[in-house]
Image (cartoon, rainbow, N blue to C red; front, side, top):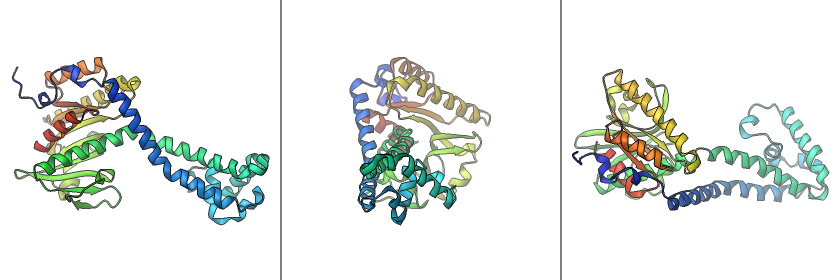
Length: 318
């Protein structure tokens, strides 16, 4: 069999896809560090809350400190989203319930009890935001590798800012833009290319993790609805826990099958690829089989920098 398929640049067999123990360990450490980074604002808020609440001589006095009213609601167990649906009287009732049930029974330690309950709710918020953190970190890693490939080839690019929704010109000093980047656009050999992350494709009616389209930023909105403009579509599973590896692959495999079916209805067969952080032996064998029979165009282990660089180089050259 000719060795000209793109995945041969970083794979020689299924074993190369398997996540090693060292990579799993490093992945868990990276997640812990990210969780700590995201928790820092909550810890600082708790410190400020403790300082402000210490002015109160009794729990009831907390109602008179205007600046901490939102924090009192949080300590009552009310989420940021729920706050938007509560009337002023409901908010007061929730805070009064906190005071009566938890702060007054705490006696002189009511401020510490308040801070504890504030952090308890914030911890739930953080836990919710961490559920897909593996995927988010995976997107960042792929974005950074794509930018690196473009920079090495001296190919200029634009990127879409997640907050401003503006397309910005890429600069040589582009540190940390992957934190805010949701799409990258470039031109190679006269061909316009746009890579976009985590978007719902109209004719598939499902979110796809990565899509490479033949278009420039101005054409993106119309290209989304044109099946012929899609060059490659991929599934990314960034979770590092080996216990969930098989389930992640099953989900990705179903999504990739759905993608191929949707395009085949239009007589099209764009490239499909898979990137996973936790890949076990049985998964690796199935992925390798799909690569060899042409079902998948490419695949990579997210924890392996060489894999990621090779796959993103392939995407940049399509």
